[in-house]
Figure 1 (cartoon, rainbow, N blue to C red):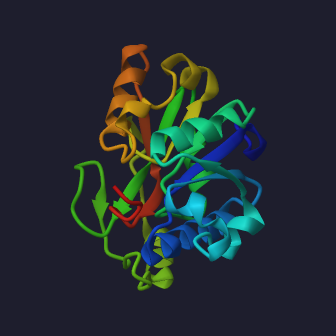
Figure 2: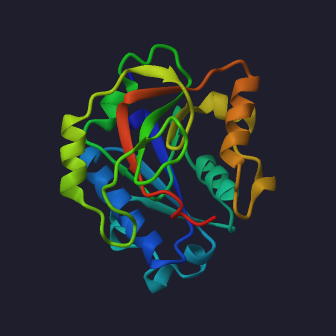
Length: 224
């Protein structure tokens, strides 16, 4: 069974707006509250890279995460961050995702031999058909923690199904096989996640989603 020491979470961060800073603060606070033993690496790129000392990184980032500086581009940032780690598993997250209570034990429950797994996303507005729409506020400072906690408390998933989205947990040897992200998608990385999923599928591996684990996604906040 996986433990926190087996995993490093990578969070790329552009940090050019107040909304992005607020979202990262919410993301990190949720991880501190739900998985305090998890190792976190923030890959600051673009604006955050050049303004690290000017407040673009919230204080909680320096308290609970290791920070690396990368050239602008989510693909380059994630690849560079992964290269600094040694854990058997890597988890990649957007910086605008709020983690629910018990998200980690629920994610790995009955995981069997799956090599790439994702939780289910809850979003404030319609998106992909695998998401569930439920409004708990956005990244403008109006996120409703109480409403989110109440939703999590009453939520019931349906177990495993095929699927892929950020955040995702992937075994390092599979990451090495596919070569990580294709940096040709930078600087804005549009469609890089679809490309990554396709490369995983080309190896013969089917990414899986555990709907018992949920994460709130502010959506379209990280910068594209």
